[in-house]
Length: 194
Image (cartoon, rainbow, N blue to C red; front, side, top):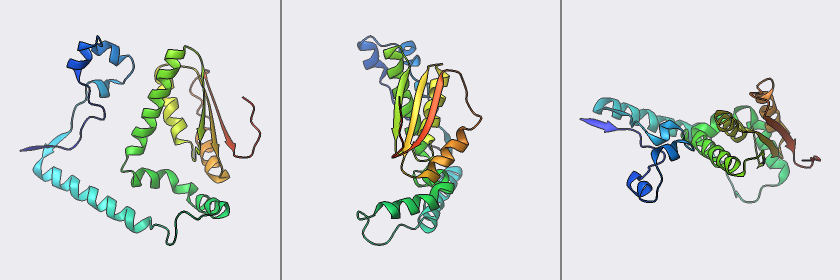
């Protein structure tokens, strides 16, 4: 007996698409192959339950090691928020990935696809401001998509916390992928000219 352990991120109704004149090749121009023709992962019963156990243990470890803040949540002042992100900057990427069960990369990549499609429609360099950019993960995923389609882009990541921005800048140092991308990380309160 086989169990499917993954579903496609985007399910396309090809009959409806064909009825309004959209072909597979039209969709393939805007979405990666693994979304147009997804292969679900399948496994046996034992592997399925092992996967479920590992997933459950992962969720439990996140709850144990990433203890939520006690007290009223909505009343944080800027200094407390800054202290929290100063402390979390070094491990923020890993913790965010774990608390979203790995879905954060998918969400960021979807934002990149949306922006790339806007750029293709506009037929010009897109200028994007990423508010609360944190460690710049959304910008990184957006660049992956723009480079895949060889589209020019200017990206500015804006955040309040300087340590988070330092992580973003250190990731970008020496990783310029093509001549058509411009990336800048700015702290809130700095002057910026676009």
